[in-house]
Length: 113
Image 1: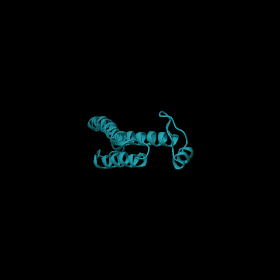
Image 2: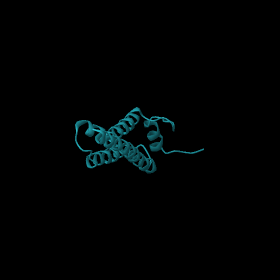
Image 3: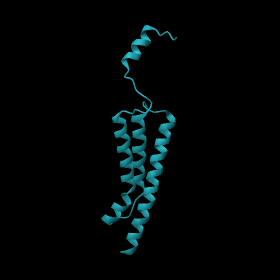
Image 4: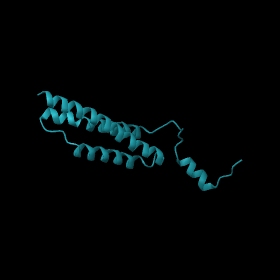
């Protein structure tokens, strides 16, 4: 039997009970919003092509890195550092793949007109 001090017992009572699989809705919404935003930024070359300008890599890169790092800073208290690094890596990988596909499509569209 484990004996807890009075402080430890009160501290345990103040904290709401959470199971391992239960994640607060605020964190889920933040994750979903940051992933959707990174995916939308990956489609920026298509928007640039639709407006008639040349696709740029500087702005989408800066925005996607800022979103990945910003959402990680907000989520740092809820997840381990490995999860946070994987979050950043995953967002940048998704952005890069969508950006490459949309850049290719934008260049194909620009070449046909």
